[in-house]
Length: 253
Image 1 (spheres, rainbow, N blue to C red):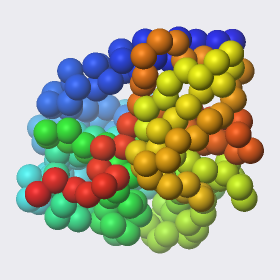
Image 2 (cartoon, rainbow, N blue to C red):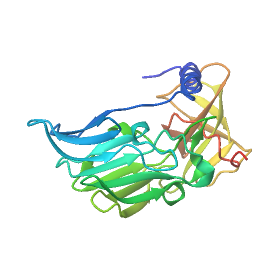
Image 3 (cartoon, rainbow, N blue to C red):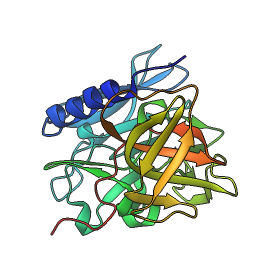
Image 4 (cartoon, rainbow, N blue to C red):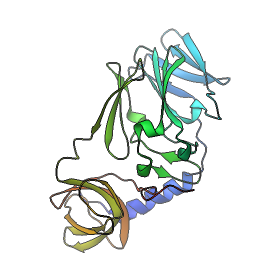
């Protein structure tokens, strides 16, 4: 099914800009099986067994240096013992290599990872007040004591939920040999063929400033040009990632 990507991209970008400076406050997260939930009350997170209403433990919403967990995404394990806090919409200064991933065990932080440990800051999205580095934080779950994340440059990271240890770091399978992951403005060539002016090279053999011609039958662009992040192989579109890298060529001072 085709879609007018130019109009959609403009809408999404406008929506991002509109909410870029909005403060985020969350106070409830549930485990994937629905048995447990983390509730925020009086500046403490309380881990509750839903069937009995019993509080298993609690931990402070405040970390340090103005880090608050209510601005993050919390992932609760199915036994309620582990909580992973992900600073996926961060108000911290990414130039200072802040902590962005926190592992709790029974309410105690056992490990925290900094941005440079798990993500390349060239491939983040930042605004005047926040930055993002992670795909689909809301869909992340703890499964078999493992937590799997994917950064914007399509690196799959697997952590042990009970220790916070990084178990594996691998390129996403979509980035096969001969594949390029690039971003830049897309314009219509003719029929189902398009041109992308390469502004950022995330993966593969491509050169900044060059122009790539590719074919796309499932996604169609119309009119003007829109900035896209695309995975291309053998001159054909493999995936559109729906993001715009704005730190690729250096970070703001």
